[in-house]
Image (cartoon, rainbow, N blue to C red; front, side, top):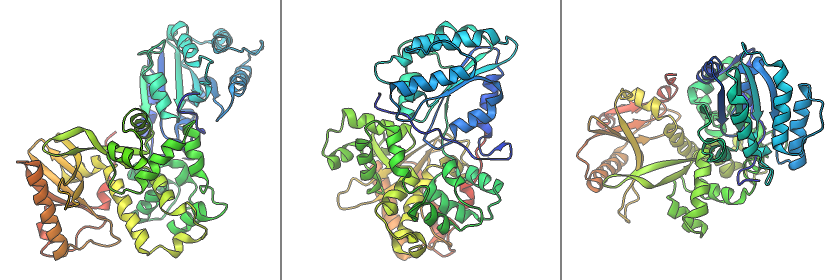
Length: 491
């Protein structure tokens, strides 16, 4: 099988008949289904993000065929899964042993019942699972589309997979029969804070935004993880029950997570472990040095795969100009970071409740809040009133070996201003004292000196509840709070 293997079918919890938090994606799918031409839609995204549920709930009534690959299955398992799906729609012939014959059997079974006046959908879920080495599944799929599906204006083929890199490399960027055949590509990302809040409110949660933020910094915007939390329990209680209890539903999720995505998960886990230990991220060369391996070839591909799967984020850096290469890789997946920071090897089943006010937990919240903010830059720009201004954002590190100055988020604007953002987590208002004010001034001066920028500098603080009013706070020109991060993006 390919480098990336299959994953479990993810799903999105609904309330009644309503899908929460995916209004834009539902509209997209319905728009594609309403066209008067053959459509080939490919959807991909991280495991547990809700792809399968979204497709089934939005377009399920129009499906004439649906099948799903078998997680970590062998060749016979994949053929049998497809064959069983064929028999559910009336196929009565012998079981095909080649993918070309399997798709021809599907064509022959569907043809007598096709309605030229009605959209009819073929849905193949967990597509990467079917690509067992040597079976030429992708070639057969391409032939199926080119020779039959594309000839019928009423047909729509949807393929879906959690093995994101496999989907991009073998379907989206295919150079064979599927080259440029995808009519629509959809990458389903985790929930934003606004979507998570909408989902939790629909489930009758009474949590305030700080509680939702704290849950988000542990479980991320993954609908399935959030669905396991009970509305009547506290954040700490949910974390202990799901992650630290011996029978916690998510205690073994980490092992399944990478095993389901990669046929050889070891090098990916090694990269994630390194990034989990470096809160400010690392360049590709630094990662290679820590792992004691070459910084090209496989490492570049593995990092790219982790970025495509929404586990790692890549941020450009700036010296005297913005560097498009040589940027910083940071662990972006909150669940993965939390597992490495606390869960792995822990035996206290009430660990989170026992350590909720410990320095280690406070440090984690500070780190995770930075990552939450980096994932909500559109909301930050809107709060700053610059969402209509052209911007570039990047990170900066001091090149002075005696100074460990770094700014995680810098927003460089087309109006020749720069928002130099400090990100601080606090359960109350954040207080800038004399010592921190000096550090801020030194950091700002170093940034201006080393980048030689001529843009105006706008000191900006991103906090939870704003700044405590004092003389030092008056030097901060812009302030963003937790409420701003919950702003809904325009669809």
